Image (cartoon, helix red, strand yellow):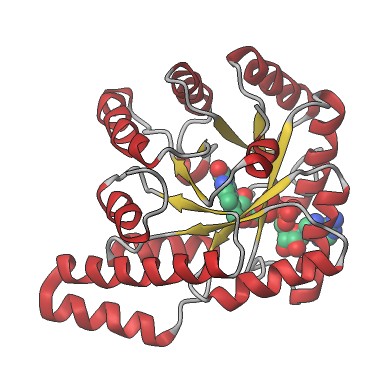
Length: 291
Ligand code: FAD
């Protein structure tokens, strides 16, 4: 089932969940336990990253196969940097054989010292979108969108324009990069609508779980963090340790989600970092998902 159809049929806001494939197969049982705990959120779909953070790419397919077998609508991510049409075409065939109907089409990041746009056959994600649309015309295609523009973009306007181009190339919906200022999401959606893009834009939310994980993701994605929020995380950790920091992170995420739903966001994509505890608490606090 295509995710854009599921979203248009959803009669209430939903959760979707992002996982990354555990690099080591011995970690898989614990990983699938986490997935089972999070099933109580009735996620509309789950997504599995591809090659991010040095994970082996083939695990994406294996994990997706297992998730589909467990009855979940699964969207693997796929990056095209450094890849050719042959390997991408084979991956798409494997996905279809696995019962997957959706893919998140991304450019990805080139190895340090190389330019992504010169690292292979596909220059940008829009090239991959067009390729997937041609090879698998009935597949649901998601793309990345950036409330705070992509770090390589010189201006907001250019980044918004290139995001729109991914839809004009055949994408059906977008998942956003994590962000902490809801006005950035509002601006992104307004700008896409003004460019004639009416497809769903699902906001991606990261509940802050630790300073270490926050630093890691911020260094990778270039999202902005409001100074006041950063200071309150720091202060809570000094006074009450990681537990207190998680409470501040939880309360912030809950407020963010409420405001996004008030703005008309169709649902919330949670960056789970493969952990269930905070996600379950967010579901309980926001009363979103059937927990
Ligand atoms: P693009 O849309 O191609 O954009 C990249 C840059 O090029 C931007 O600055 C854009 O403005 C510019 N640009 C785009 N099109 C054009 C054009 N036609 N002409 C000129 N400039 C253009 N990475 C992974 O490795 N694995 C993952 O699983 C993964 N999952 C992700 C999931 C989400 C929801 C998000 C938001 C990101 C994810 N990423 C992942 C990170 C992503 O690969 C990087 O952010 C990457 O740098 C850009 O990918 P993109 O698909 O947005 O690229």
